[in-house]
Length: 356
Ligand code: IPM
Ligand code: MN
Image 1 (cartoon, rainbow, N blue to C red):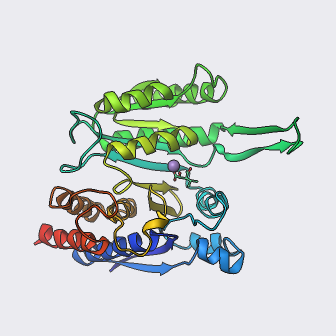
Image 2: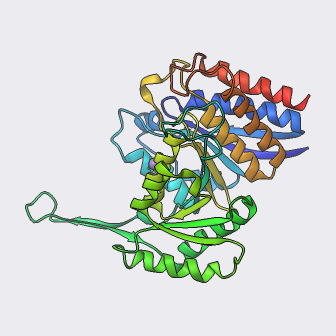
Image 3: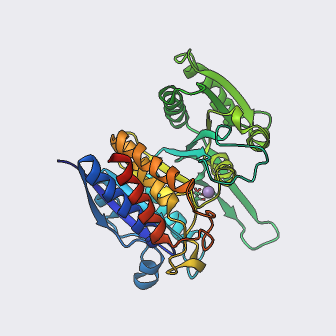
């Protein structure tokens, strides 16, 4: 039987509850589609840090490299200063596993409410390809004369030709394989960031010549966010740097119905990729069985797609869509009309129906 080895990091807050439902539905899918998933759990997160004073064990990266994928819940603990876990776990894994793409689909499912007036599922269906290892996230810079009136803080955006090029190629290939509008929008700020986005824009057009079937489009980030609200149907695939990608995908998540449903993949096409809900650990809902697990289930579907189980991935997405157009009242924690585990059960039941 085809077997995939998957590292599971439930993480903090509501992460474990979301992951529990993700795994439940992944297991149900695997059974129906004749493959098996070999899950191995890791306790990385805030509790471990508070207990052991260590964010990640020394051999964590080497261990994780042995897996075909990582399934992550959420990272972030109210008793740990912001930045420690984010940088020490999430960003470290993205960087050291060279997951250079952050793939974030923005898709409104039927039955889900969007805050955008007069917009329907056919209007909201695009994908953001966010560069995931460089830009302002690279950690270049520093503080001089800290705490004095002459303090200087510098935080530089790092854009390498190699990093930009591999991200653009991924985006062009993805846009082609997706086969929808075949339009790739570069989201930048060429009018102000005249060094960084000069490189991006030149590379975009040079590489673009290899993709005559893809329409090349450009938008400044401040205009892109405006169009995402006004004319989301304009977009097919958007490619952008790390910081802009971070910001515009939160807007994307909200127009697709909220953090309850938004999922993403941190992709290294030739290494270990990691799949996660875009939302945080929502500590105030911890342990109440009220958090929406659909984002985790969608992350699971993306993981199967990445592993090559396309049909199973589609089935999982369709099961989520069926649940969304069913009796679920809202995507927000505590307002779904069902508990976390009931929503997971519903997805699993829909899977069964789809196959029979
Ligand atoms: C995200 C998050 C992270 C990011 C944080 C938690 C470091 O906001 O995945 O979008 O900024 O990339
Ligand atoms: Mn973010």
